[in-house]
Amino acid sequence: MADATTPLQTARTRALVQRLLDEAAPVRRLWTPTARLGLWLVVVATIAGAVMGLGLIGVRPDLRVKVGEPVYLLEIAALAVAGMLMAAGAFREAVPGYEVRWPIGRVALGFGLLAALLWFLEPVHGELAVTQFIATGIGCAWRTVALAALPLCALLVAIRRGAPLAPTRAGVLAGGAAFLIAALLMRVDCPLDERLHLLVWHALPVAGGTLLSAVIGLGWLRRWRSRAPR
Amino acid sequence: MECAQRGDREAYRALLTDIASPLLRFLRRRIADPHELEDVHQDTLMALHRARHTYDPSRPFEPWLFAIARHVAVDHFRHRMVHASHEVLVEELPEPAGEADPARPRLAEVLDRLPPAQREAFEMLQLEGLSVAAAAARVGITTGALKVRAHRAYKALRALLGG
Image (tube, rainbow over all chains, first blue to last red; front, side, top):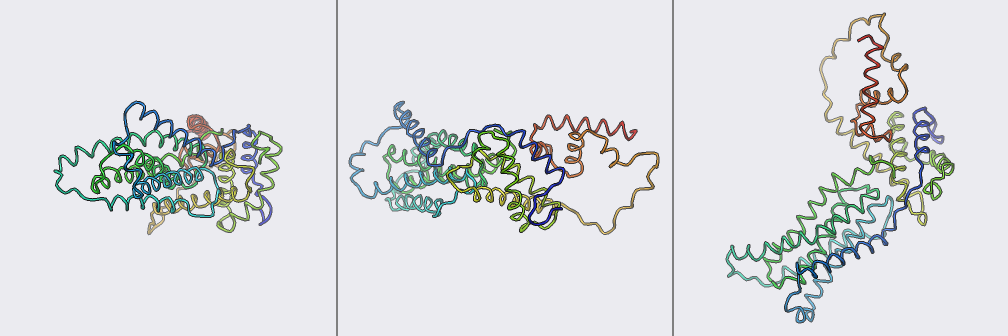
């Protein structure tokens, strides 16, 4: 075996190096995380425009009044910042050693929790029957999932093109980003400002989707080491 | 690395030569066993090769390289822990096999007579205990191609061992 400063010169290592050299075809370099984030946001904006154009989601009737309320604006801003920071973190996860000076994931989580806290401060309408509560809410949950699906797929595929060293974390960040942006769009669409409705039908899909994305990340994003060379 | 990304073989060779020493020093601080060290070193080179398109020339190279090396080393330890948890300690060692038939060649000698690709496939699957997917990934071929190599190796070994 080689000493501490010289390379290993076993036949196996030499053969491996030779094979790597044989496979040294030009590769298409990954765009920077910032550029990829920008492209993803364009994709998300296009999807949002398309679903609004098709009438799958709309705009709440009282939006003009709501945009004058600081709490509503803070909630929308918190969701937007949390979603974008999580997407930025997800793209950084795809590049080994791409260190940032601040904990981007935790800051994003903080903004997400701020939005949830603001939902918690909304009034409770206890007179609503359970069947009515489910009937009015289930549509919001489904639309949140539907809105998040394509951005999440785009984000996961984009991360998979890189080399995510922490696939579960990358999955969490991707899921959080896609579902927070979907929750933001749903807050522009859904006119119900009720605590239980928001926490159950708007927040739970975000939590569940993020968890599901973590599982997808664990199973799928880690396979970059065994894929064929590009 | 920038030249290697463009497909420059000589630049890539120079890079792999240059990084060998610092990479080994990095891995040696984490892995004492020389055989494990060699395995992890090779896995790191493979991972570096698979991830070379992610390197951004405007950023320093070392954090990128050592992040990959650290990941491979941690992954190696994780696999070793899983394997260790499946090992079973026995109170008595099994009886050694009876005297070998002097007329039959030893496995090591027979393996030496196999073509290198077939021998490598056999060793990875039967001696190192790798899965087909892991072995295929290590040599950079498809699982189907690895199965073909292994099948040919088994067939040749049966013929050489007179089975």
